[in-house]
View 1 (cartoon, rainbow, N blue to C red):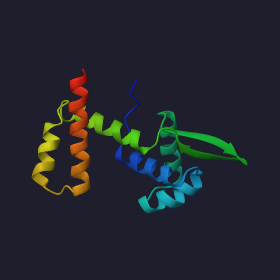
View 2 (view 1 turned 90 degrees about the vertical axis):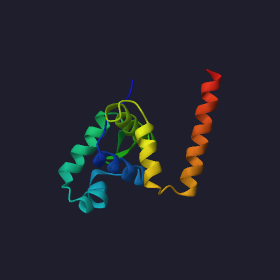
View 3 (view 1 turned 30 degrees about the vertical axis):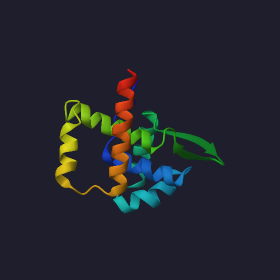
Length: 128
């Protein structure tokens, strides 16, 4: 079963957490929230929502909760991209690929990664 969707700000928070875990709400509020103009209570609400959605876990240590990622930002990003493709592009990646081609700002590393993914897709299709 796919995880519930997350928004852009939740994804940014998840990335921050992944880079600094395990962290307290206060640490996230200071390191992430202040830069975003978010109150500590807003950061706590976001973190608890992410925990309820299964993206974060928490453990009590020395009288305080420490949060860490349950899945990592990679899975959250894949989920967000998948939902975008399904909802916005009606399941077709062609418009996205066309946008990338028109944009023309794909680095050599990104192009190599895309080529490897296409090769992987071809191999998977042949096996089916």
